[in-house]
Amino acid sequence: MGYNFKSSRNSDIGINRKKTRVQTASIIVASDGTGDFEELQEAINSLKTGGVIQIKEGTYNIKKTITITSNITIIGTGKTIFSTTTNNLKIFTINTNSTEIKIENLTFQGNGSQTGIFADTSTTYIKIKECNFLSLAIGLDFYEGNWITISNNFFHNLSGTFMYVMTGPIVIQNNLTNEVDYGIRSRGLTGGGIIVGNYFSSIGTDEWVPHIDDSGVVLSANSA
Image (cartoon, rainbow, N blue to C red):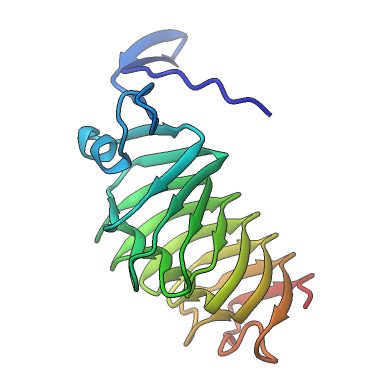
């Protein structure tokens, strides 16, 4: 599948059959200099009220965490790789109180000690879709996140857990894990959740959803 990214600073939306011009930024990150920015953090910082960031294929070597703020959509090609050898690094951190964030088609790769995406306190309406999490300690740490959707992702060779989650509500759907020490870890989904259609291969412990025993959690069609 080819990706033809185009940058734009505005778009037309229809309201009552009339079109209204709104500022909806769509910008491109490319490591080879063919986009609007070469680094993702610079692109995020440029979007004062949010927008869409499209990231071209390539390996982006990360030495410090990338901080994501509200109303940001980040889309890769499937061959967009964020790689780090910095020990214990959180590759992406979703900032405190951030909301309406979408992350799609990215690969997060470490050396066994890192976290792919960490959500800080009081984050809401987060969607992670079709991403790869490779050779990390933790894939997703959403201990304080709410209204989260995790779907169609691949987790491989994690020394810790595929996902930490605490409050909810949350949807965890159609994810694949392989060679992961723990599955989903939680001390109680107080907001409820749906965990459906996930496949857990080569889990290091007997339980792939330990500690999730709340009546508000729906478990269906998962296998290990």
